[in-house]
Length: 355
Image (cartoon, rainbow, N blue to C red; front, top):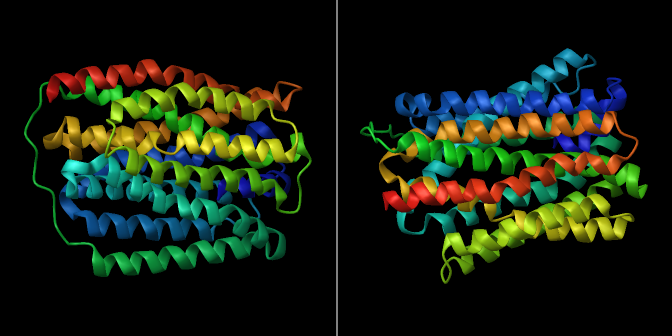
């Protein structure tokens, strides 16, 4: 949602690239804080109350988006991030716990469903932005979030988590997965968040067309996750990740170099296809490699992922503000992706010793 709104928010609140990048820091900083407290809340509240609280915070944050003051809008984005920080770890851990033998495949299906909103969202947000302004976007998000909270109150079991025993190998494994997801979410958020802005400046797209590369990216990400869910029945997660982590930096670099709207849309689709399975496949290691500690390990790892989403888009905006070439805005994403292969090797080594 934030990506399509970024050009309007930047203009309305008189923000440069650096200021606009700070909005990503507010959202993902809030998500990191939410993920940090998520583990403790899961122990005391259970999945139902944590998920419902997250969606209600999402609604509250969206209600502040139409405010005329930058501080209020930033606060709304921060609250929105706190809600995401509760929702995302809880949802992924709930699915991982309920599908021990096929967690990577099930998590790809889960994130495929989540990606459907990311596909439909950018053009819908752009249309509401142009026709109804920020108030229309805020009303839609508020309404949907409240409906989801009410639905979850009726469907998610009201169960609490039992305490997990100590694990001497926990620290090294946790840091390895956290580094992996910090880099990945930093790269993905930089790419998806700045893509509409890049389409406007680089390809001259306007009037909602600037969201086409972003929709292609999310659509291909859904396809990649669906394909991975099938491929993981034949190949291991390690084999799939080896291919994905080789192709990801190439795709991101190609997107930075794309000129016209057509080539940018096609390259964005390629990037989404490659990016799609990485996140759920990495999350599945929390279950497969450390079943007893997954619920304790998970929230801090998601906090690290959110921190990547907070820091890297801001760095990208700062780099772009100091450069005359908008293509450098995706440079931090390419660097993150190049660093992911050694991070994944660090994840696999501890996991191999624990299975």
